[in-house]
Length: 370
Ligand code: EPU
Image 1 (cartoon, rainbow, N blue to C red):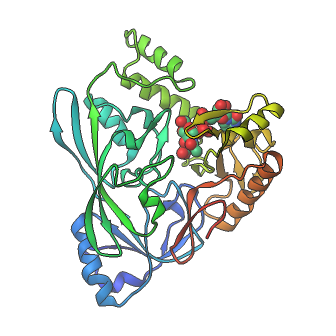
Image 2: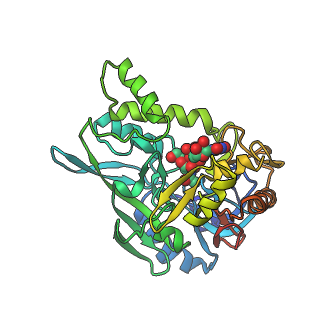
Image 3: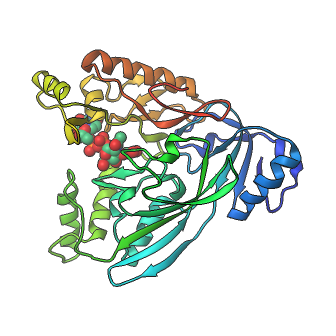
């Protein structure tokens, strides 16, 4: 049962709660307790009185949109679900707008809203599932844009010290699919995210893959010579819909593996055997290799170990063929199979991207659970 702090007495605290429908991978999961937070004050009162008065010392685990987590069958933790809503315009000039977005706002709806308002920058991040509060955790990125490019600050609650903090983009220590929130799990609950967006309709980033061609088509349909941000957004929605499965129809948690970063020397030696290997140059003589390409070349596109199978249009996405019944163990079996096949063929160890949640609410990253 979900505990709504506005109405629920503490007697509802010890109820079990089914989270199978609250993670986009649709893994079977029952949590000890779930607390839905409608505003920041509820978190304060929960932390200062609720836990203390009930004497519970279960670990705390923050669950946002559930689109980047692999949940255990039993989650022996207090699950905090930030559901605060609101988008506030905090400053505006001719060139930019500052907005503050509450953690519970759906990310894709926010992207559409900003573009409709004439506030630009987030359009390349359209159709990424999840809620705004989780976006800084893995510094969501797509089609040449990362969240950090437009984020100004994060307001977050530091769970160990029960204190509120405002973190600048620098404080967040963003990297590729990485941030301080990811590196110090079970520590922060993000409640608001501040963005500075621009208002220049001619400034778009459409150079990635097919985006330019599809965006140009949208522009011409609108009688425009050049793609505007709305055209780029529609192009990206089209492209994502074509190759990424909709979690509502085929459960998944997006890219399952990170694109591995290897040395230029290793890349050159792989290129001598695989001339069409896909890699992007990175600083310090490193190369980011497309994990989807590696998986496809290993003959695993559409493969895996049932019920966890790679998507037939995008090998980087693992899908669940047995929704609400498949478990984290099923994921581990398929994941480890893929990791060892790739290692055998290319001597590259793939690292998992979604968060692996252990039974006690602690989390792990990398190729295996903690
Ligand atoms: N590729 C294959 N076979 C595949 C999949 C990809 O050969 O099955 C090749 C593609 O042809 C392309 C290259 O790999 O040459 C890269 O593929 P793509 O452009 O689809 O992007 P990606 O590197 O696989 C990353 C993000 C995605 C994001 C896209 C677009 C990571 C781990 N993933 O995927 O993010 O949408 O770029 O920017 O960085 C997500 O996080 O859930 C996600 C979908």
